[in-house]
Image (cartoon, rainbow, N blue to C red; front, side, top):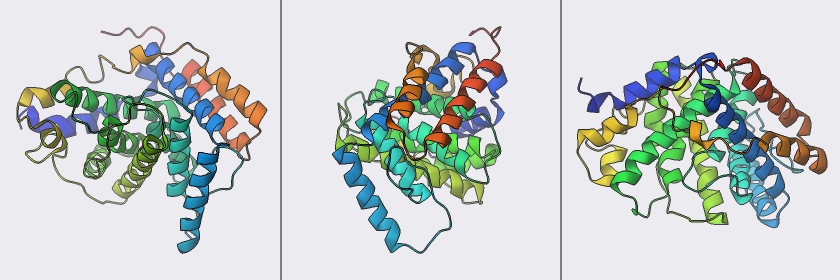
Length: 314
């Protein structure tokens, strides 16, 4: 197998083998802050007219479907939705609240991890582990696309967010390398979306759909559904489709230093994101406040106990 044909397999192995206890401290900090800023931004936006309109729309569709016996918690003071609708709503609210820059993974990954953690099948794998491997996967694919086609007009989050979310979900659900490979394929085959330069309802919908598709891709992969064999690096894979390049070096760039030189690490914020999330939870008093508070406390505990402070970046 050439290096070029091993990209998807290498990402799957990285996601399956990564453990929170082995991550550098700055990676854990970035993952923790990413969760905090997404939750704080999402709660702040959940009471807006745009968020209420989206919730009403999603709830109406839920009512048209047969009961699934499962519900997902939503940010804010609105009622529960189906898991797919809830993850759509939560990721969209995070974008409406200006969580992170449009080109960076975050809302789709965080909302996917929290949705997976809420399900009975969740294994208790560290939430920050799923956030870290999902975000890192998205960042690396996005970088490879941006270097070859920086002005393609396609949304980076639309192209990579489904893959990032699917990887994060499978990690949270305790999947293995094969499930990761299939989830990457199922996520990549749904890539779509035009670029938006600022938080907007269009960007929010795009991210919400990426989160939903990523969640469903992850769940389907856990049941044995299969995606294309080489969804990123293949002759008809995502990288070739978007960039037009068949240079193996472009694909190899995605996996060079994977698991060692973390792109997520430099994204560490000012260290106050989780504090802001606590403050918004206290002030807004959302319906599912106790649940999200438990998640916040869990990631804070993981960030203290999980990372090895002695681990140095190469």
